[in-house]
Image 1 (cartoon, one colour):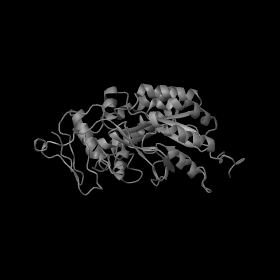
Image 2 (spheres, helix red, strand yellow):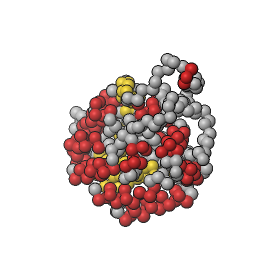
Image 3 (cartoon, one colour):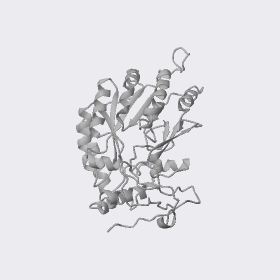
Image 4 (spheres, rainbow, N blue to C red):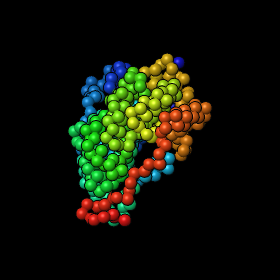
Amino acid sequence: MKKPLPQDHYKIQRSETASYLQGRGAQFNTKNRFFQYEQTKEHIEAIDDWEKESLPTSYILQKAKSIVNKVESPDVGMGYSMNPYAGCEHGCIYCYARNVHEYWGYSAGLDFEQKIIVKKNAPQLLRKFLMRPHWDATPIMLSGNTDCYQPAEQQFRLTRSLLEICNAFNQPVGILTKNAYILKDKDLIAEMAGKKIISVMLSITTFNEHLRRVMEPRTTTAVQKLRVMNELSRAGVRVGVMMGPMIPGLNEHEMQRIMQAAAENGATFTAYTFIRLNGAIQFLFHDWLYKNFPDRADKVWHLITQSHDGKPNDSRWGLRMRGEGNIAKLVAQQYKKYGKLYHMNADDWKLDSSIFRKPGQQGKLF
C-alpha cells in the first residue's frame, strides 16, 4: 500500500490526466513556497477554458546581476561556482537545484525542466568579475547548480564563451556534466588542460537504461559518458567520475561497476553523494518512485528515510550528503574499498592558480 507523505506547505498541482509524461522526470508542479496564492484545478469538468499544460521547453532570456557566486556550504568542496543557465532540461528527478527555481518564481517540478533561464550576459559578467583588483584566482566550479552542457548550450554557447574567458585569464575552473556535448569544446578544454587550469567530472548514476530514462530522462547514456571520459583523457584532460546520488534499492549496488568502467576509460578521481530529498524534491521523488517502481517503492523510501534520521532529508552539514546508519555506512565502505582498488584519488593534483593574469598585463598577477 502506498504510504502517505505529509504535504506541509507544498500542495501538489497534478495534471488533468493520470498519464505518465514521457521524457520528463517530474510529473507535476509543486507549489512555490514563496507564493501566497496559486491557481489549482480542483474539478476538471467545471472549467472549460483552462489552458492545458505545455510540454515543450521554453528559453527565457534574462540579464543577470552576477554570475560568480561564493559557496557558503562547507561540505560541497568548492569555493565559487557559476551557472549560465537556471533550470535544467535533463530533468533528473533527484536534483537539489530544483528548489532554487522557486526563487525565480517557478515551480521545482515541471517548470524546472521546461522553463530554462538563460543568463545572456554571463560572459560579460565573468570578465568584469575577473578584473576585480583583489581577485585571487580561486578555482571556480562551472555547473555548481545546473548542468552547463544541458541542451540549451547547443543554441546559446554560453559555456563556450565562459571557458574562452577563463582561458584568456588563465583562471582555473572545474566542470561537472552529464552531457556528451562537452566534446564540442574538446579543443579549448585540452588547451586549458595543458596549462593545468581545468578538470572535468562526468556524472554517472547507473548502467541500467530503463532506470536512467525515467530517473534522468534527457541525459547522455552511461556508455556515451565513458566515451567522453576516454576522449578527454586521451587529449590530456584530467577526468573524474561523480557517482551521485547513490539511492539504496535502485543504484547503490552499481558503485563498483561505475568506478571500474570509469578507471578503464581514463578517470583518475571520484566523488559520490547519498540521496537526500530536501524541500519540494521529496514530493516529486515520492510521486516518481511509486509510479515507476511500485514493487519496491516502500522499501526504497524506508531505506532513504532510515539513512536520514527518519526523514527524507537531513540538513546537518557533513551528514546531509552522506547519510548515516547501516546503509549509508555500507555505501561509504564500498566507495573507499573500490576507490583504492582502482587507484582513484591517488595523486595530489591541484588546479594551478599561479599563472592567472589579466589580459594586457605582463607576467604573474601576484
